[in-house]
Amino acid sequence: MNADVEAQRILKINYELLQILNEIRSENKTDEDWSLIESCDMFQSPKYCGGYDATERCFLFSYFDENEKEWWFEIKLLDIPLILSGEISSIVLLDPK
Image 1 (cartoon, one colour):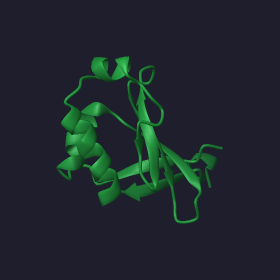
Image 2 (cartoon, helix red, strand yellow):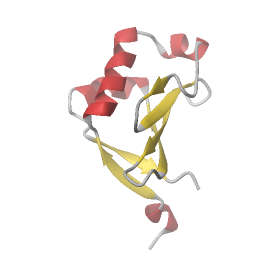
Image 3 (cartoon, helix red, strand yellow):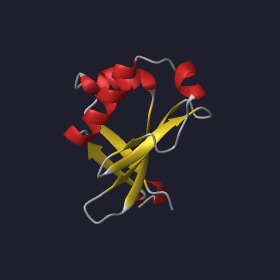
Image 4 (tube, helix red, strand yellow):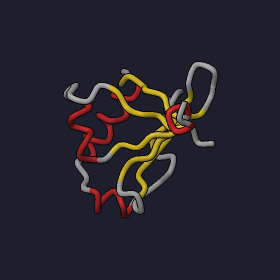
């Protein structure tokens, strides 16, 4: 099996993440606006920690699974409405190792 496949996992979008994404949407900021206030831990909840990264021009998050293992993922600002509407229902998690 490919090592890249082994280092990935699929996460179904859940209520906890939707709350964070609703908060981001309610800010009504552009990528440029977010770039001015980038922070790696602006959004925190029991399973998620993340914020906007101006270099990557997206939101970068850590997700902690049921075993407290950390996984990474990114969400582009333009994808947030698609996630909130249900058009995107899962995201790919990457093993940070």
